[in-house]
Length: 119
Image: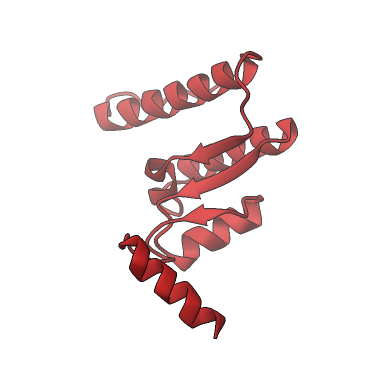
């Protein structure tokens, strides 16, 4: 059974409720066999909290565990720091997107950068 958040702290209560709502939504989607789900994305709101609170770290690890158990590919969005990426890798997530890897740019600029990197 899930632990209740500390009494008298509305912000903690809301964060806890938001996290539980997100997890319930994920479980519901994963249980719905009508959806051809082959990839799950960890929302940037969870990634942003990695290393900030232990509860959020556990939630991210639970999402990764569910995806791995069900054989679903996983990607984390909003990865901005090496610490976030390292935590995700240690936890079993190997695909990332976010400012750590680059800012949004026009397609032509991206293609030029790829050509340049290839030599």
